[in-house]
Image 1 (cartoon, one colour):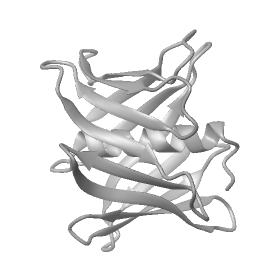
Image 2: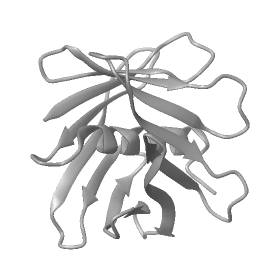
Image 3: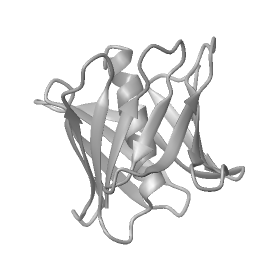
Length: 164
């Protein structure tokens, strides 16, 4: 499934609209205004229910985000290491699965792969005037909002300079 994640222009907080491949609004990502740390809610546009909450850990040695669904932890994302040609992040899910996000901020090309090397998602940046716009491809059988949450986290890390 292909999603288009577009940051709303001219807002004080980070909000995104997520459209599906048929250009229908599938999700909205709502940020909080005047927060020290990043905090987002991904809301299903059809019924208004929150599907994922994203919270940044403030006092951590490295960039670290936690993902929740209905109060239960889904997983966490943290910078694993600086690769020789790009950034690398590790995603640990609540069921013990470890995923890798590998790519480059300057080219905005990221792959999400599992420990078997299977491609679960791909995130690329599209040209857009006055806002950020990403294409998020999600493999069949993979949770779309979870991969969208990873795209939002990467956007926030990029806005913070891509460094710890």
